[in-house]
Amino acid sequence: MIINKNDFIELEFTGFSNGEMFDTTDKKEAKEMGLDADVKPIIISVGNGMLLKGFDDSLEGKELGKRYSIKLSPDKAFGPRNPKLIKTMPMGVFIEKKMNPYPGMTLQMDNYIAKVLSVSGGRVIVDFNNPLAGKEIEYSFMINKKIDDDKEKIDSLMDFFLKQRFDFEIMDKKVIFKDEKVKPFIEIFKQRFKDMTGIEFETIKQEKHEDERKNLT
Image (cartoon, rainbow, N blue to C red):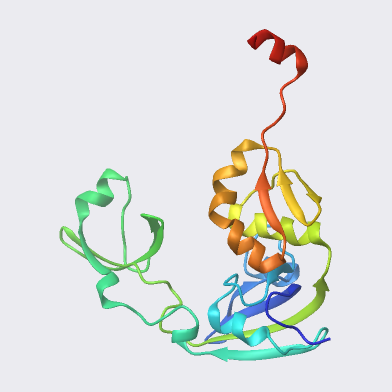
């Protein structure tokens, strides 16, 4: 079976940079990296930005059950290094956060993973580039299966885009959520989700119980 754009697939992969593994869906390899998370193959929709662009583009035309390897140049992976993302910061910023910076230290600042390049007097030079920016990336991967079940597809979209799951029903090629909390998310993503699945996404208001309606009259 050949994979096409918008197909939902279960994908296993391992990513390397300079021969060193930086990402994997293999539980055994994850343990070697020191990861304790519940690592497993992922479900994605091909050609819809759920992977690095170069990796995503490479999936179309591939076959199920075959092992592939690809190399990505920086522009198709994590992008080139940006000199503007190397900042000089006053030591006081770190003192306020009770940090003692040193060269090579990695830390999270302003939702970025940053690396301390040097510490001199009251100044700290910090690199906010992605650690893999400017590097060639290699992926070894295999497409395990194609996903045809609509519920499994929708669950995978919630996992990726919403980072949580909401209860839903599928009726007449419509996905209906009854939880009003999901409405803002669906308004943002419903057209994109429809393009990916061919299914309409909507929310409905919960009907009030009869006694609650009587209390309002």
